[in-house]
Image (cartoon, rainbow, N blue to C red; front, side, top):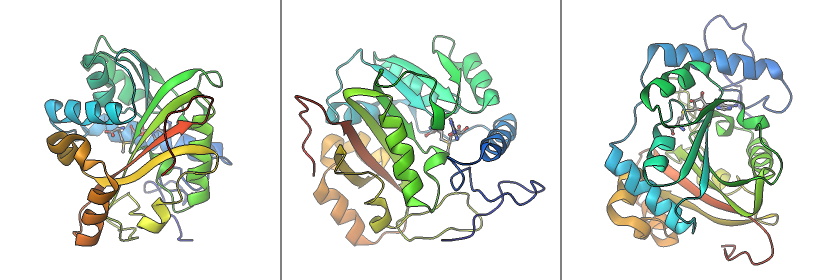
Length: 258
Ligand SMILES: C[S@@+](CC[C@H](N)C(=O)[O-])C[C@H]1O[C@@H](n2cnc3c(N)ncnc32)[C@H](O)[C@@H]1O
């Protein structure tokens, strides 16, 4: 396993990268993660896609996941609430949750109709089996070289989802296995990404290799095994969106394992 870098200078060299390594063991890593993001959001605006593009992207994902309009969607690691707000505008009952109180405060000022909560994705403040849909895009708790910890994290999220409820997981990777020094993001290999989710325990669609703009342009055609394979084999070095649709198994589940 790679040695994880410190989240910021002067943090005493704690062993985590956005908290991933020590996710389920070490409260300190979450404190540091919050500190990192509070500082980030105090200084920076997050780079989001155009609203129309984002809405077409989300609409396609929700159709693919067979989520009816009006369903309740929790955006886990919502930052200042950009995606949660797009869900709301599309007619979903959206709530955003983020560990950074600075991000949530900023979001509340921007999107005054959107419910936003400060909370930890690793310990969601909701009862077991109570949530319909979780959307999680680029959450730092999946940004670890420890694939077992990503699986455990996804399992813990699915614990909060009701029978046949769904997690829409959106990650990012250029598929090279690089851990570039100038970036905070781990580019998992495809073989690692394949192991993010336990296919025995959960109904899984994906991973799809795609891009937000491709999904917005081509809809469900850009969320297929064939398209994913073509993009992978073309070998273009670009940070692709990695998409999983994960559904809790339950009587009458309509998703097929792929
Ligand atoms: C890379 S940003 C992605 C933001 C947004 N989801 C998007 O796709 O634009 C990661 C976000 O996850 C949040 N985050 C990191 N760890 C978290 C945790 N344990 N619980 C909740 N949010 C967390 C960060 O504060 C940050 O807003």
